[in-house]
Image (cartoon, rainbow, N blue to C red; front, side, top):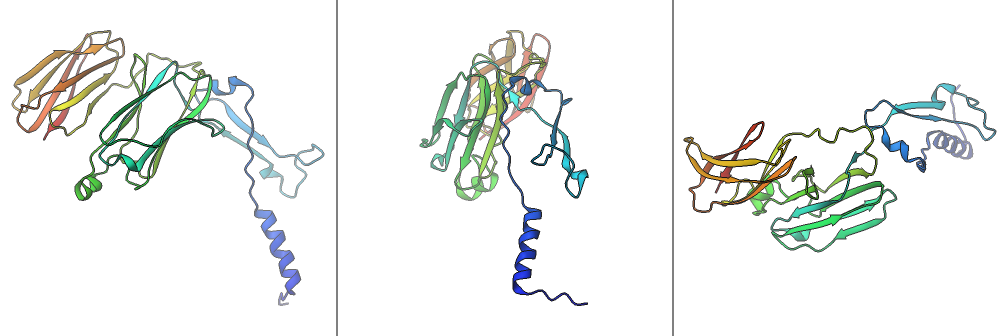
Length: 278
């Protein structure tokens, strides 16, 4: 038999079919702050569908009434921190904002100057937050094509603890936007002394004026040495350092263009990273 519905029957059929496939976004308020205390991935998020009478598994396909999945807690920042944003030469394309878990804007910068450093300090109440940077030209704040074709320089966007190490370094070629989600005041179960060893040289390449930062177990003493490709030492100095962070501002405009190495010596280790002087 050939199915040949009338127009009304077809409408009813499509309506029923669409209802079956409909999706709904449900927001569940979190009232227990211990929810955010699971950073080892052992807890699970459990959902169960009920009918209006409160009895589960009464629809035609019971197996899809229940869903269990692990959840990833956001990264956390304990204490005050600041956003360290160095713009490129097309800063009019950029803006950034800090929002809370409800999307309310706590702070935003809508107008930025070219090749300028901004340091905005925050000390937030316990909760969940996001920092979002946007680019209207969809090429981030540092992209090789934009550099070669449009002459766009590289910017840098970092989050750093006040008196401490860098928490997050945003990718420069993020396209249209980059979002960093984090919590404040929910640091249960985390070993705060565990750090990823990381040397940041900015900008790189550079004209001889640049910043060097090291995030590691430093124990308040770090010295650096600039070495050329022949292994000759051309500059040494003591860095400003605390237990987990060291930094220096370098001015070597007089050295020839080329490739060089930064060698950082702490109480326990030696770190090495290459940079380019234009």
